[in-house]
Length: 111
Image (tube, rainbow, N blue to C red):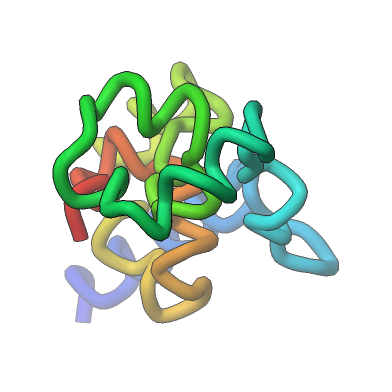
């Protein structure tokens, strides 16, 4: 019984401090974009996403190549990971939303 109470209190504290708690979840499209749309329109159909330089893809054509993955709040992501955020996040958010929130910290960037 005591263990259950401790777990419940921990969950309440995590939820109360949760910087990601919002009325609406983040829209990955707001943060994911192609920085060079004309380049992406011509190169993506030619196989850029599969055989191109990864840094170039992320910098220029992240949206078109489905490479949007970063930590929106790097310091908070590290703290939240220690509290189990990466484990329970996928129950509350889509994979794409978690990739934008804490994708690097939660090791989702290659999924």
